[in-house]
Length: 401
Image (cartoon, rainbow, N blue to C red; front, side):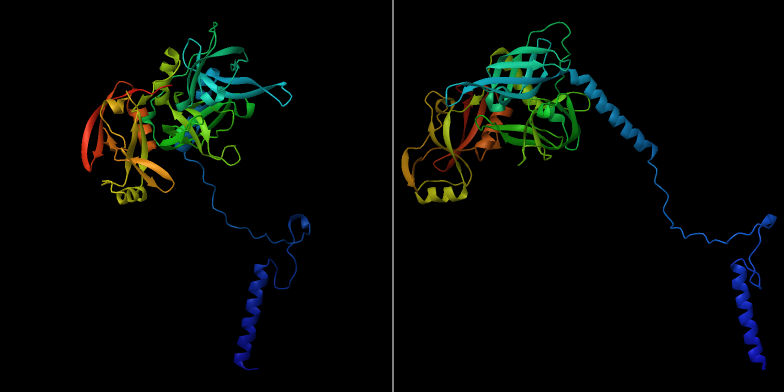
């Protein structure tokens, strides 16, 4: 046998020996005998996956979560007793003239220690009987104190027995910020004293009153669950202050889709005292019938030989005799022009701003008057007359009821 073949054979034997030793056997292949001469079957450990170690929450994160939870609980315990269930009852007649009772429910909250409760107008609309149920289960008959359909607000009242819960503090909605945590308490679907949480999704939204479709400014948008029955209940900050009155949702199913709206606390601050003292809210009023301009409409009017140097604004069609606009010599149209199927009085003033704030449509005009002015204020109205811009002072009067 050659030296090369001997070396090759020696190498193979050495490799096999190493493999057998690695498997726990000797060169002869006999199993390793454990102590006390008890034979056993050798086993191989199953393969294991290497997993990253679990990430434990940082101490400050845990503390923040616990603090938020504790704050929400504190708000519920402090404010919950002042949130009430409002049941409205009315009656109608069927085709046989038999009386058919109708019942609806919503929420509200104690506004002061005299037993005044703030809720939505649409919660008590057309009610012939009103019942208020406190968190304690006590039920009281209530009466209407004041109504403001335009802002979808109402104040009702109950007798003030001893032990009435403390009223809820009203916050300043001008100081709110998007992303701020909020809490809603109410009676969705008749489930009393229900709490939901969320954040402020947007500020300064404009919604429409369900009664007369007038615009409500300063509305708060939230993703806190708002459902039928929550209407009239409070939207609260984490200090337990009312920042809004839950009023509307956008949802094809009429259940929460994460888009709810609340009438702002500052609107409540303006309206509620007037409802208590007067029974209604005096809305400021110009007293003019106007038509919002669009670029296409402005073009059509120019073709009718009217001087319109702007594509947006409010064209005054007519003023009400004795109303603020007429008293300030704001002028309506004097020339009838047919536009399509309609005859429109043209030649009137075009209002483009109030107190320097542009107003292009009814929404902007209504929101400005409601949120920035009150009856008796003098405002500077910027208008265009015969193609030239000028400013007139107008003393706002109370809109007729």
